[in-house]
Length: 426
Ligand code: PGA
Ligand code: ZN
Image 1 (cartoon, helix red, strand yellow):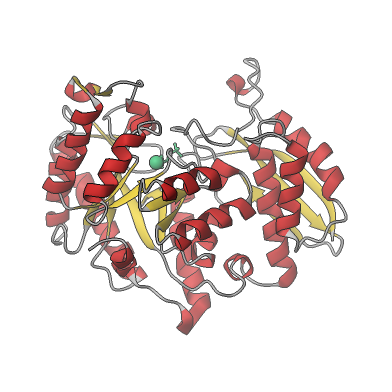
Image 2: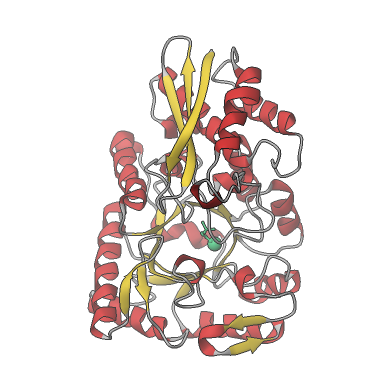
């Protein structure tokens, strides 16, 4: 049973404060929860509680959330069985009492939820993926890996947030990493040669210096070919438009191109990119309030590309249910801290899978050295993992952890690569 719950401030990959929770059981076994943080957050996300005191960590400290863990949350959970993840998560939801976890803070609640899961796995003496998946998880995910950063992750160096690759030709997890490695470094060389590489962005992708939004596509295709691969066969492009950041309620804008679009015109642009380039997946092509475009896009493009809702759904059961009912997408980005408990996150995955849609387990732009989501991806047989780029240890720790999980699974490990898309694409 849980004996003690402690919390303290640590720092994420951007050097911003976040919290770590330590759960100690009566037998001395411990578990930890490290909370990530987004930058291009969706308006429907659960609330990340920060102190907003200008004199402390420029407003970014999380001491209120920490005190909620140590006082209110600890007081209701001490003595509970660490194996009752669902009961513990439900208790915290009830204690908070708000729709978006704004009273105690979703960061406080998630830290405890993850630490409890970790302690439970440690108490059973099994890896987290086995514990969370009741021993049923064995699908090694196909990676979605960022090559260029942009948008809110690179101070708006270009308007599109993520240019990513998916190694659709890979026959093994190792091969998918090899392909990604080769394309990532080739892209860096192409950008350097063109004088377009300024450094690396928040998630480890190259920090670009482009004049138009089409330029990165050219660099991408050149890099894939330079690395010796065939675009659309070995390697496909994936985009996260993060379009809520580009929409003011009536128009979309792409400042780099000095262009303003009506929703209809922006629809045509998204469709034309998907037709012109070897794009297999597109995330948030429209704003989270532009429901009409989502619906139309799903109808016209839903068997040609994976259409992922991130800001649209914010890993929220009610919003995903609405999306399924109105047929708005065919995939859901899954982020623990958008919803705030491990139980609700797994429910969101199951709901997505039951609808015949694909979950993509995702990190945040502000990450930690924890590999929880690598375990979550395998535990739930989600089949896809998105963790930013192929650089920086807060990213690599997740890719590397999948290597370890695969070794641990041995013969029962299952990599199906791009076959995962067969259920949604023609
Ligand atoms: P965020 O970005 O963590 O800054 O929200 C990730 C994404 O949009 O997928
Ligand atoms: Zn996104």
